Image (cartoon, rainbow, N blue to C red; front, top):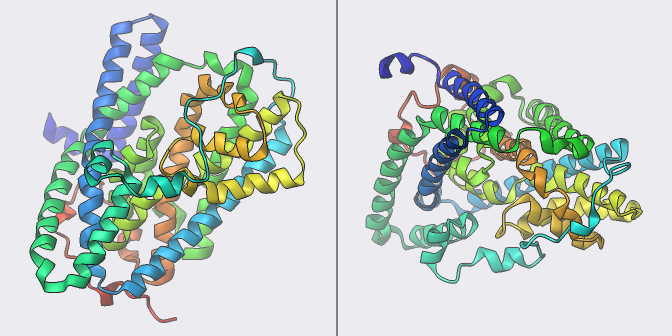
Length: 437
């Protein structure tokens, strides 16, 4: 049985899990089968937990090894600056699409909701969250809580220190290399369970939420899905062609397992190991991917921090009868480009939305109106987030001349779990240096 399954391409296995999950979800909802819904929830939850379990050691060891391997602080800084620049460019495009769709569709006009029951969410965003969230109160706490941004910060500091110490730090670096290989080997075992995890996640979503909640907010929901789809299937392909001279179909062939898992799991951090694997399979150097993907998982959110807050702010303003002017729309764009970093310590679209609403002076209770359908919206938002987290390092690597284009062109021909790449040699700083124009 196991050998027969291995003959089926991994992407097809995930698709089969998706279809079967939808079918079981509808069956559970139509017949009120609480035991089936509970089983699907448990299966999906355990899979995401297994992925999240690998995140802290994977991020820390990969970044430490990567920083030491780079050996050139100037080149590392150059890559970091270019990554942040492309994060900002894509976020600006995404929020512009969100604002444009909001003005075109007027998602809040004609919507009748009980405003008396609306309440502000417990978690709200502020502009100081980045500064207070990036530095942990203690190193152990960052790993226990799974705070990726804090782990990235610690790993960068430790890696830089090991780089400066030199030979004396080699035993520590060797230990991290060994731990990284072990974590990656165990992680691929977990990734092989993705079809089963997909079945549980999408099945529970269908059984728990169905589509009944969408009726009063159908226009808003459609606008969010259309906006994210435009970013995902129009903006990213255009950027891949224009900025990276890359075939978008090859990108989606390589990144699709991560995008698909993001859609059903609704977790950028939970999907991060698969995202990093996909990005490396697309030919992005592991040393760079180990920094860009974890950093992007907490700060690069075109779905949650750009398209959605823009549409939601317009929706809330219209429901409460508040007029938005040109200055307000500029503020929405500013919050989307800069605010995702400000709320990186408190991930989540609701947190980002509250930051947008508070900046515009709109009632925070408006966010409460959308909580009922948030899980359904979160599926497409997270898929867009993860696609962006894969697009940016791919474009940067292509423009820097470090992208393995043969690997990129053949990404769709190789299964995500086929080859064990934990033994792939680390590139030197010279191999990672930008190719002269």
